[in-house]
Image (cartoon, rainbow, N blue to C red; front, side):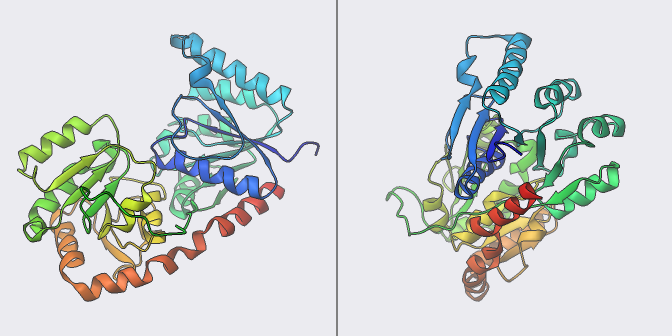
Length: 360
């Protein structure tokens, strides 16, 4: 096939979220494999590093309003793919609106199309109705799921059989970073989107309060941006935790914070294959997570590299927090096993899986 070394990665943006972080890492993997990478992003939000050519539709159409902006963006993508003779597309967006994706199907045409599914909440990616999902995706080259549980859910809910699983990769830090003196070390760390409906900060803050580890000097550090920042701040005040919880905006170099944390914590109602857990383990930092749908149980080996507890169980989570902070033997075991537990998710290993998929 001519020009089969050209690939367009279509993403919402290159900022803040795990799916966006994945897009940046994917571009490095594909570039190193010899592909010519074109990033097409819908929103003008670029935080993560990437390789290749950037097409920032958010910036190009910043003056446009309403439905006409979406139509013009779509037409621009179609024109760009044609003019650059790009025959392979990796669609990394969430895709909840059926009518919009019918338009997208026309834009992509007969190209090789790989659709990435980053969440167990399948309605973020598929029509509620099987006929809609089948119409849009039964002829896709592949539906790439970031966890095996997501692939199983798709096969159970729809009649789609063109699925595969490739986990999110992780970039292992090459050095130890230092934090400014005013930033607490050996804290419990959360980093990600500030969205209560997904991340369940109510559970996190209540369990932290119940654990009482703050009475022995352990702080909770929350890093990120999102629509529920005010809700989180109000909850901190309500629980009288103002002196023990620090909230910081999104940090591009999150590695320094991970390396200096005691552990990373995740309390999501649902996930896909959470980047925060694998990035923490790759940096040598243990993790605590609820056993939400999906991802954590494919990453965490309980009492080996972290602690996995029943979701929505405030008591169990508070006990896990106390154990990680107070049980030095448990902590050292998890810390010693952290990096080697995610070696199979290295950029080199995951890149080879993508290469095999693209060349199949």
